[in-house]
Length: 144
Image (cartoon, rainbow, N blue to C red; front, top):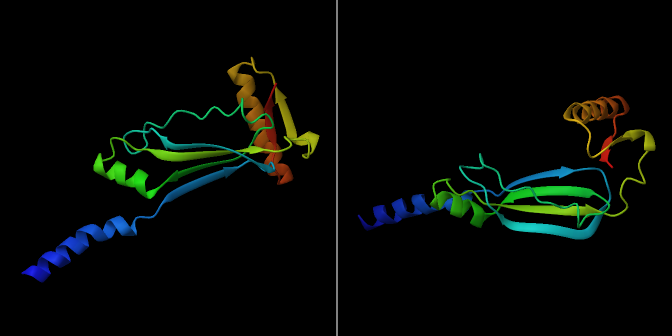
């Protein structure tokens, strides 16, 4: 009976050690700098259906963003499991770019005024998608 309890305990603890760490990464094609903004406990809820607040990087990343990475560390997943997914924290890391878009082809940059209407913004992103697909390289929408 004692070995049965040990096996049962082992089977209950084993999934904790087998959980992988979720990781998603988005890169913009810009050269990354050493400046990184990290939020280790971004507060999300209901298994991530209610996402964490947006990381405002405009003030710190004057040359734009090179990479955004989201992770669920072991501790993030443990807290999520303990709360049955009601509280779903994650780690967010934003890497600033070094030289902005100066190194890119100017034809791949679409300028949009900050106070533009929603229709113009959507049209600009659609144009960038089409341009990127045609040229098989990144196209950028730049808000001025």
